[in-house]
Length: 315
Ligand SMILES: Nc1ncnc2c1ncn2[C@@H]1O[C@H](COP(=O)(O)OP(=O)(O)OP(=O)(O)O)[C@@H](O)[C@H]1O
Image (cartoon, rainbow, N blue to C red):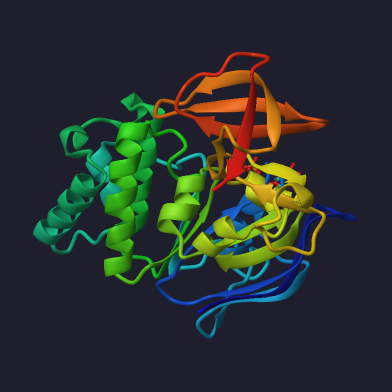
């Protein structure tokens, strides 16, 4: 269990970056940390790894307290690995050597086997003997992930781990990585802007806003029942519309949050909007429309003309 207990932190005096944050993460769980840019996601990861001293509060992994640099000669908690946004690779050594940096040379065959296994997982076997300075950003990011896993950490902390990787590889890599982590019961915490990291791969999602934890919840549940527009917006476009338009939705609030895919064009609906623009999204169009002073997003299989009036049903 990772226990974060009432921690607060500031880089500069009287400018708090994280305020009174508490949560627990069971061993083997996968957790995403989401929130707008600058809300403190990276800082929280760094504190969990022991790269800064907390101002207040305590962090524990199992029964061991994670202490910052004022208590440790070499900052960083041994049982964890942290992959930062800058990958921290040795540029003039090969991919294999980088991955094997922390592996013992005592059993060379075993070491090579482990390197090969990791190269395969991150789909970098063809680059084993290439110096890392010659790799693209996305390739370096994959090597950094493999290097972090080489000695099987108990906890893996990842800061935007797939940000440099193209979609084609990202999806395969994510599937490989997260199924490997589950198999090995490695706890994984990912700071991310990518909703797929949260929705498809994290059991639990933590939401930060301006340095405070605003919710921690089952990822699917959070998506289906976002507590407010800020949370819903982290998953994509969302409409906040008067609840009176949707009597079928039970709520005591004055407004309801509705994702674009929950609104469908209907000839019979009395809720009429005026189309402003259609954006092609591949499988559908995202249509921007106006209802009185509200902006309304909905999905349509066809592009709709500016000025066109359509009815929308909640589905
Ligand atoms: N070394 C530092 N010294 C002073 N302020 C810092 C330092 N690092 C980060 N900050 C500030 O702390 C706040 C939180 O930064 P952090 O990088 O943790 O946010 P984030 O949520 O990870 O952002 P992003 O999504 O853009 O990566 C920001 O206001 C940032 O400017």
